[in-house]
Image (cartoon, rainbow, N blue to C red; front, side, top):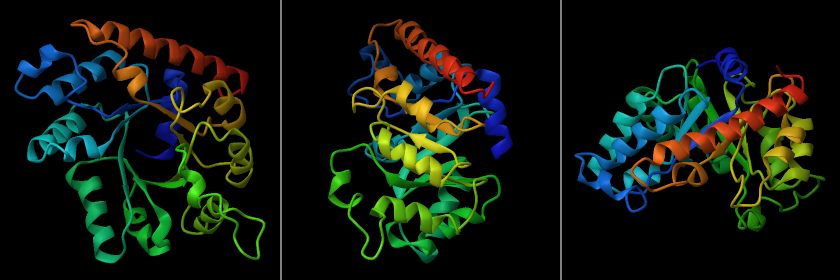
Length: 274
């Protein structure tokens, strides 16, 4: 999926919502455990309930890999079930170099047909470049995350510079490619830093986790992070997919998703994107 298609999807659906498919077999409604593939059946119901309200889905690979070959099969079926006009993000946080990166890229972009993958840029330029060689595919670089441990390294001062480490990662990586195939991860609870980051990358899309449980505000993220093309993909996972556990859980899931979409539509209008 290219940049223009992402922007078009946002304007058409009046949404910049990504639903994280962090599917834990221990948390899904119990009646699904009787099906042949409970994880896929759960994902299928979530997708059917939300597909017209979201622009992206983001499976977290750990939840599938932990189940071995069966989990990988559930992931494959899930990706195939997601409509082609919805952005598919592999939440993998991979980081390696050389042939290993090339094989990871082939895995995500060819074998599974994801549109994007989250990556750790810690090993530098040659750990990211293999992903940028695929047409209409995206590298999403971790820059400033929402977890408490982000302070361990991401805020360290760079010697001889006024930059923190997360700022240096963004500035250095800008020379690797463009806003047409590279995005950045910024936690929703980093509002003051988001303002600074947006000034550094005025045209790039930012993937934003951490709304709700981790202290992030959709209003703050939207008002401070949006650009002329929206430039945001805001992810919510557990607060949506586990919002109900009854046999008709999809009704509550849809209602919750619809409310978020309506709020997003309002911010898109306020910021003159629509």
